[in-house]
Amino acid sequence: MKKKYVDLKTIAWDAMERYGFIPRFPHDVIHETGRLVPEHHIHSRKGIKDLRNLLWSSIDNPDSEDLDQIEYASPGENGDIHIKIAISDVDYYVTKDSSIDRHANHNGTSVYPGVITFHMLPDRLCKGISSLLPGEDRHAIITEYDVHPDGSVKHGEIYRAIVRNKAKLVYEEIGDWLESKIPVPQFIKETPGLEGQIRLQNEAAVRLRAFRRKKGALDLETLEAQVVSDGETVTDLVIQKQNPARCLIEEFMVAANGTMVFFLENADLPMIHRVVRVPKYWEEIRMVAAKYGTKLSEHPDAKGLSTFLTKQHEADPERFPDLSLTIVKLMGSGEYVPFIPGKVPIGHFALAVTDYTHGTAPNRRYVDLIIQRLIKSVLLGTKSPYRVSELNDKAEWLSGREKAANKVERFMRKSAAALLLKPRIGDTFSGFITGASEKGTYVRLISPPAEGRVMKRESGLHVGQKVVVRLMKADPINGHIDFEFLNLEK
Image 1 (cartoon, rainbow, N blue to C red):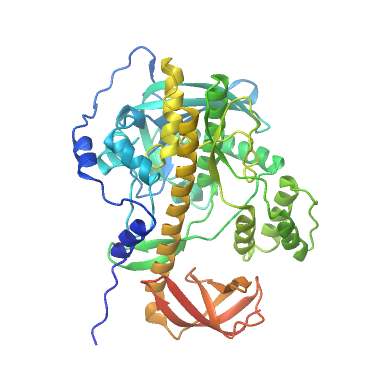
Image 2 (image 1 turned 30 degrees about the vertical axis):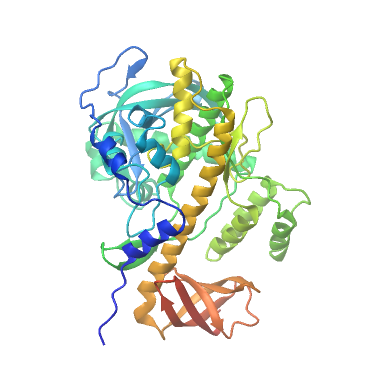
């Protein structure tokens, strides 16, 4: 009998449409994009600084071409480290209410199902003329701030500039080097000043992270497998682990987003905040902590929860991702809300910051493009491009688009895992129980890092147990993986 071919790309296209996305760029968007004229030789002019001489660099995934930001650090006074973040001026090419803009607003975000990427903007834009690729002159919005020795931040200026990326670096390689797992990468060794530049950036990030953790920032680590594909089928599932390079970019962007909020507040301009509310299921979080022998306070306490999570990470790193996932579900997801300066902000419980937005990835997220336009209206002295009622509608819509994107990506991880496991029906695997309730019992395999449902002999199992299971079924079309429990493993 001929083996049935499973086309994951087709499944991904179907999933996009099922969750309300328009995966294909309409004709008017393609036509409008084709008419854009890239500027290969940009000249500085009034109100636009020329910063092309600085040793800018980016750190991203090896295959990323839609580069939104580049970074530069320099020593400041009294032990400060001065940071410049250059954000691609996507608004320079994507005008409000254009065909490209309306399509980007509808989808709201780029979606990354693994076997194919559905970019928010056409490739000619996000991977071309609006991408901060190495060796190209680009329009950018610069956000500056100082990192004090204790990790606190002094917000600085925001302005327009011309920049040129000098080094496209990769998370894994830079992370391994910063952890002393490998010697200085050859490209860094050959580029004068780059080693010192990245080490200074890392020092700033270490300070920022330590300061936020003292404030109660949560150290969460959920194991979301990334699909490895040869373009046709799934070859592996890998865990994208946190490392110093990823932490560096995360900390720099948190501080940059805070500076953007500070800038817009000073201009008394309504905006959109990124929030994670105080957990409504705090009592359930307390119950989880109690199972580990930790008593959390009766009222939501980020510092106490942070201390508990750090302690558990050190005590049992193997099971920590599943504990993290439980806490994430009980905290609730992030969302976008309109914010009027002078009002009390909701804040971001997990990051331990009160004033936060998303403004550092305008090639990939539409809300970031909104924030960029608001900032540019201040810089140009024009009125806000958005009414408060419009910001309210956008925040609600884009929160929904993000949730839909997460559903597509989650479904495709399950579908890819099922395709990878399909030839191994009947094999046994070690794993951890990640869910056990009336809704079902779920197991996460150690290798490959796939998750499925225990459909046979699941009675009596509980979260955290290490088990041996047998694969019964793998259905890539519907994203189902079913197991039979065999025995507990010590």
